[in-house]
Length: 235
Image (cartoon, rainbow, N blue to C red; front, side):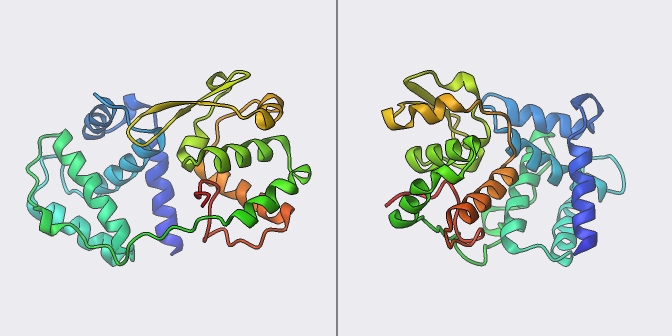
């Protein structure tokens, strides 16, 4: 487990180096992911981590063979990753191959099968109400992200991208990471003081998950961090 985490950190560090230092194959991947529709920064980083890991396993820098692709997935499964993660990396490597005009040897039926369907854990109205009533215990940033997440129902990636220029006194623009849509919303009058009190800064999604845990703790909400998230839907 420790070895896998170490290798993942190395791959992430290498993938996050300036574009000029990227492997040419990864430069082609970034170009593919950036045009014509720009992928979210977190999505691009995820693809680069997988791409870096794949390239490190090649014996030479020539076009990968069918065996090279197969050996990568065999290696990753031996390293203990889940079938869901393997499925994600399957599409990452496919995109890498397409970006570099490498023959892709697999068909749709070869796609790794997920162990189970992803589960959704929506927050119950009573728990949301409990958090809102205890908002006085929260910091300005915690109140802001709780208000946005429970009112507009957005993904963590969308929360992480919010900037001060995205809202004024009455209108809030959400830049959705999925499909790159921009949606304008009127800010409810009750939330305008919360928007006025906080100047958003860039976060990564893991920092927002930690923030949600703090919100749960401060408000006395009995919610497992693995079982719910700020972007859960209100029913």
